[in-house]
Length: 85
Image (cartoon, rainbow, N blue to C red; front, top):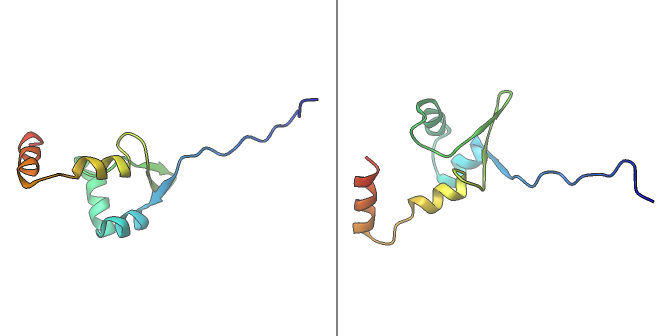
């Protein structure tokens, strides 16, 4: 017999708080706040009431951004900076 009220597993989306991300990236929380206000830098974020959370995975998430800023060499970094302007 099927359970009439099955329990669903919670969504497996992991988020970092502003302070957790600031610690992870060794930045000031004010820097993250400034990036959010200008919209030109930083990872995507979600706002739940007054709480700001950063998705850890997914397109534009923390891990995605960390992978995009990694460079193998100085010339590669210079090329990335020129193309992103």
